[in-house]
Image 1 (tube, one colour):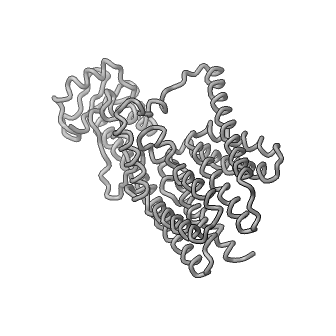
Image 2: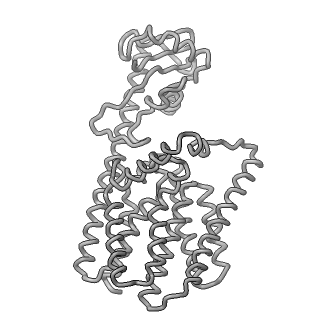
Image 3: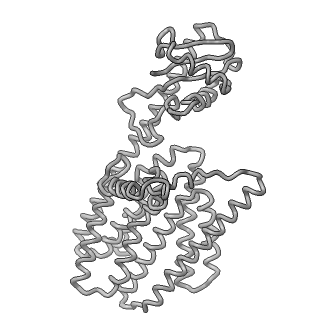
Length: 405
């Protein structure tokens, strides 16, 4: 095997696997295995799709549809992942045909696109049918969690356009701890490649340019659908795949070995930077957890000193919030955020999540009733801020603690 070709194999994986968005996603520990398996299923579905297209055997389309359907039902943001891989596969087919001097007719490439799209469409429809069937059998009421986030028609059009521009700008120009300039660098390299091909009157450009435009847009499809930036984890893993593929595609066209090696070196530098960010985010989450445990223990030690016994006899209401103070804390959307600082602005505030967390630690508080919440808010101005002596109020079987103003 040519060592230069074998070296190209590492470009996509190291940029893909080290991306910090994975830290945000897998902070949801209870769904980490399922999502990881679904990511693998999308990759396998794309592989079977390729076998179906190149061999002509329709039987390969069946496992592709089954695997992709499973992935969509598991995690809907994986819809974009298959789209990205399918477009990338199409570009590689064009590349191989060009290198072998065996360019197909335009209708052949159109038929390849139709086959990829048909697998996507059948899988999407099947997944929705399965979801509705499961909901009906289980008697579960569907929610509007996703549709409520779509703001088209709910706010002025110029605001929607502005939101989309901001979301794309933030990714390209690394306006977040989860982004770096790898996406921008990849775009610049691809533009340079296409300019070179234009000067060389390369015929495949008529296929490559529109296909590559769709590939670069694919991580933002959910942004376009909702009309605003989605949560970071919803960009997983299409975003990091497109970044990795940009570098890989450029590598394929580079001829001097030292330039290829330089590109791989840049890839390793970016991967190291991403790994460092990912490690810091995960360490920050660990520090936050330890601080939350310590904070919960301090509250309960103070209640012990007040002579409050079995926690299961009491409801708890927390007013305000408590944020971690460690210098090691880095905050993402969920990473680095205390259980004592969620849902601020709602009537319950941080109470329900904090009670859930403390119940895990063995402090078995009851959740407050609406009347108890109303009473807690009615006396909020009478309380000091914890750990002041008057920051805790006990009335009958209700404990009220004011964490902040």
